Image: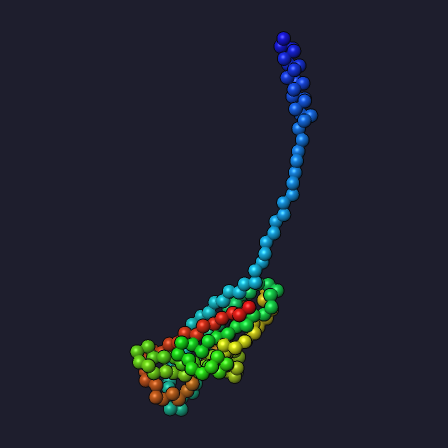
Amino acid sequence: MRKILYTIGLAALMSSAALAGSASNTFTSNATVASVCLIQSATLNFNTVATVALSAATQSTTTISVACTNGMPAPNITMTKGTNGTGTDAAPVRHLKNTVTTDLLTYHLYSDSGYSTEWTNTNVLFPTTPDGTYQTMTVYGQVDGAQHSVPAGSYTDAVTVSVVF
């Protein structure tokens, strides 16, 4: 009897092995890479500014860094005229405002070391084709000299830098 059960068990095992199979299917993977830009900026500090008659302009620099998705068209980097500015987006007149009084100190932001191309809120192109890494640009600032009517004190302004892509 044991021999018969053993034989039946072996036959069942071989039968199920013969019936064993496999099935498969394929799935796809996908992703979309978005056109994105990130921006970082640092404070532009003019330190101590002399405003007495015949004083020379005070210059300083800061940097902005922008990273955009590799291969996308070069974006535009724009700057507002600041919270105390006047003029137009294309021809801003920027002012640092006294933190206690309403007195204003005129200053300018330039995109070149010759202090000749004012950085505006109109299109200024990114310096290179985006490659996914941060590209750093220097911002050249200059407080006009001989602003003798401005009293001593602390002056500040906030300029918004934007990446338009």
